[in-house]
Image (cartoon, rainbow, N blue to C red):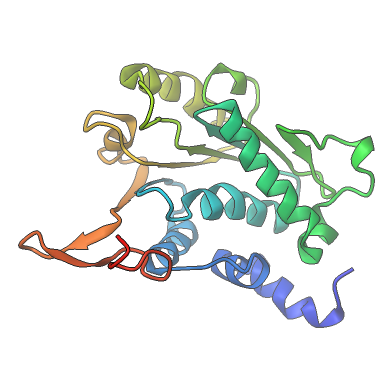
Length: 239
């Protein structure tokens, strides 16, 4: 059980994704992540799509911290699904989520079931103490029939593998997008673009989404390097 002095931390974390990341998750935060937290706060019914270079904590913050925050603050049970490019990647996300819950007293008191052997606590799905559920599966038809409040797509387009660009769009609009309608859910799409015609670029032109692009290096008007996007983690000289 967390100590009584944690009450203020609990209250701040429940009400603010930014404070949840900083006070409970102890997550390194840059200007780009401050923007993400603000977009989470102000996006309303619109969905979110972020294009970001690899290694800039998009999975940690938006595939791990964000669903944990939504489950932590939930007044009634919600469902979350995270879809990734491969089963291995999906399992890695779920492993991170479970480790955060199991090793953080403030998360443990709300989310960790009293008996892990008597409830769903597996490689791909968990059911939390407060009734919230999260499932991590590969991008595709496996998500049919699961009607989440939040659906997160994390790097479903693989840069280092042959990607069926049009097939990915068909799966997104035909299979994934409809699953959030039943609960008027929120979609969050994260990734590194693989082509100018891919899903991430298409969402930039879709009014249902708020989209933002975060290259590793911000350039001056003349094309010279201005500054690093996330200097707290990737200084310009390292890039």
